[in-house]
Length: 141
Image (cartoon, rainbow, N blue to C red):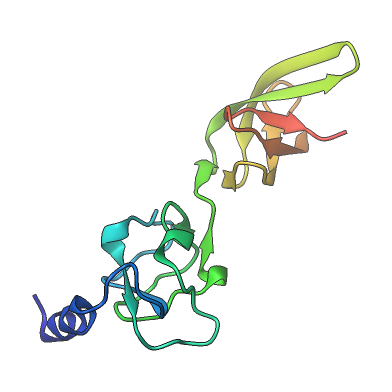
């Protein structure tokens, strides 16, 4: 382990998940990493804008690279993406009694509830659709 990493680990060793303070990264976290309890620690120092509870970050995805010892802010995190760019996904359109489903290609990454661009593979048109928990892109009307 590098000396810097050892120093950070020593600094964080006294912090427990139950104390008040600021949430920091224990190791380098690349963008699009889903956070687990092993990635985070709580320090006594209260850093303005930093998360105050480890539970607020667990299960979320990093939007940027976060380095060891750096405070984690809410803006650094987002819900994890369910759909990756260029992934083939079902597209659904429902209105009244009409229900249409076809295949599409995601043009953006997206998490549950997020609106992304999806190309209808049959017509080659691009539509905006909201990602459902089931991975289906629901076309907005």
